[in-house]
Length: 108
Image (cartoon, rainbow, N blue to C red; front, side, top):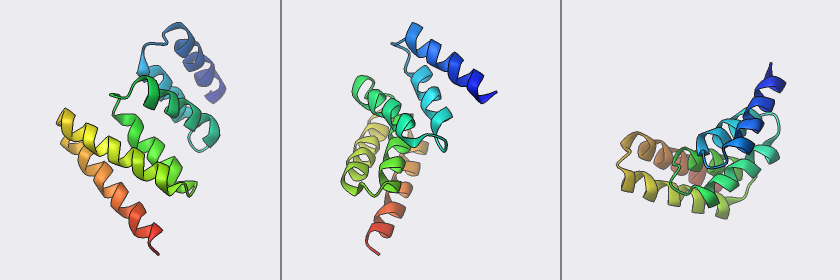
């Protein structure tokens, strides 16, 4: 089943490259299975679709888990600014909470 979803989502990314949700969905399929591939797609979203807010939490979390603190912090901060700009209080709260949690871990 997962292989079929990956195939369908990959085809959607190819046929509809201007639709960020398709690439985001593909990245989410790779989370927990192939982190490098998930991050590759998230990084494309950060560059090509910087207004796609959902990307920031996932990308920052992967960077943090890979001990890339500077990259994680930069992505969290950009996401927090974007969430505030978009007026998305729910994601703003989630980003701030996750960022605080990771910062607390980094200071240990």
